[in-house]
Each structure stands twice: as structure tokens, then as C-alpha cells.
Amino acid sequence: MESARVDDLDRRVIAALLAHPRATHATIGQAVSSSEATVSRRIARLRRQGAVRVVGALDSQLSHRARSVFVRLRCAPGAADELARPLALWHETGSVKVLTGSVDCVAELAYTSNEHLYRLMMHRLPQLEGVTATFSNQVIRRFSTPHGWNPGILPDETVTALRAERRDRWAERPEPDEVVPMSPLDERVLGELIGDGRMSWQDLAGRCGVTPSTARRRAEALMARGFLRMRTVVEPEVLGLTVNAFVWLTINPTKIGLAGEMLARNRNVIMIAATTGDRNLCGEIAVANDSALYDFLSETVGHLPGLIHADVAVALRTVKRAGMVAPDVVPVGGGIS
Image (cartoon, rainbow, N blue to C red; front, top):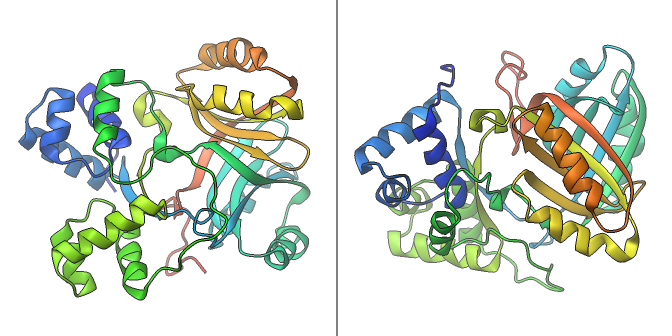
């Protein structure tokens, strides 16, 4: 993979993709004041370098397929990096980071039942060499996710215009009591777009054995239901946000909703969710530098209503993000089990 080289135009193009992952090159060109041809070349290079990916994602919570839990691991000295590697190869992990702070590693896991979570927490995690303590926080409500992250690179009116053209849901909404099952064709459409979120309707139709109009209709119906969500995946440092950190907060229960909504509107917050466990509000943030992290903690976190306790751990390394393991983590000849 080529080393990622980005300039100001690259960052604006990525910001446009964050606002609308399936936007056309012409639409992005208008948003960033560049030509369609230039945008096409930039996106191709950024994707080739691995600086950015556009993927489709099944919303497991809205579709009642799975639920999420954040797991924090305290490790023996020097064990975190080696522990994170096998953890990233689990198919249940969507993200894994090595941290510095009160814990050494954090992972988001998807589980399909309490029995499944029991096996993960009571058997598989303790078997990882170097684990000295585990803490789990089950997600019970999401206030914001990376599907709707706006780092503030483009003007607000540009982001609003791009989002207005999205067919998928970038903002969070309440979980439905019941869901309609997906058809085999829906499953196929979803599976193809998970691999390439910018796949053309023509290519999608060819892979699914249907007409382009049918492929588009099925995909957009899944988007409207909230099952299929599009996401632009990028490491914050590519956008000049060199400090990526995780925050775990304890909020007075009567103020969790208010605090969560306030954080969801903050451009430094990639995601924030209400959780069970020793902390009831957990999230990921990205800021430009240590000074900006100080400002975020003192001015934003420090003024949250109902704040009781705050903990922060800075990410040292991304081992897995959005279900994709870092290239140097997968062993030669190996894969994800």
C-alpha cells in the first residue's frame, strides 16, 4: 500500500465523502470548488493509498441482528500490542485500539445473545494472554456514530446540502420494536455494498443478477429503513486531527440524554453512546493536538450537565476500524476467523 499523502484539497474531498459517502464526483467537485475530473483522480488515489474507504454497513441494532458492547482491557506491562492482534482477528470485533491511560486496549464487540456475550466475556477474553482486568459497557442508546461525523472542514451549509442528497440515514433514531425480515436479494445487495460502498448501480445489478433499477430500488429501500448505512472510513490524523482518544463518563442518570445530545453536536466527537456498567456515557473523539484535547476536556466535558467522573485514554495505534484489520496485523497466509 502506498503511503498516504494528503493536502488541503484531499481533506476537503474526504470531508465531502464523510457528509455524503455516495456523492457523485460532480457533486463533490461543486462542494469543494474543483473539477469533476480532479475529484475523480483524488478519490481514486486516496482509496488506492488506503487513506479512505467507503463502505456499506448493516445497522445491527436497528435490524435486531446484534448488539454492541465496549470492552476495556487492562494488560500486563508490554502485553497490549500483542493482545490486540488476536482480538482484532475475531469476527465479533468492529474496532480495536491500543491506548495509553487507565486501560491499555479498547474494542467494540457485536454479540447476538446473552449466551454469546457470556462466552466472549467469561471464556474467550480471559484466555487472551496478558489480560489482567476487563470492563464492559453495553450500548443502550447511540447519540452519534461515525456515519454522521462532521469534522468541520467544510462550511455548514455545504455539509447540509450534501447530507440532503443522502438516501441512507446519517443521524441516529430510536430502535423499532419490530423489524421486517430482509429477503435473500436484500441480503445480497447488502453484502455487496458492505465491500464497496461506492459501487455503481450497474455493477451492483450485475453481481446480484437483477436490473440496475431493481438493485437501486432495493438498496434505497434498505437505506430508508435504516438497515443499510453508508460510511466513509478515515483515520482522524489524515484530516490533521492527530490526537484520537476515548472518553468514559459517569453522568447523573437524569442528565444522560442532555449530555449525550450536547456531545453529539460537537465536531470533535466521532461517536457517543449511553451504556451500562461503571461508565454510562462512552465515546471516541479526535482533536488537533494536546492543547485542543485540554480545551475539549476543560471546556466541553467539564461543563456537561450532571458530570460526576471523566476518564480519557489516548489511542496509540488503530489495530482495527470499521471491521477492517490493519494490513500489518493479518498474518501471512492468515485471515479473520
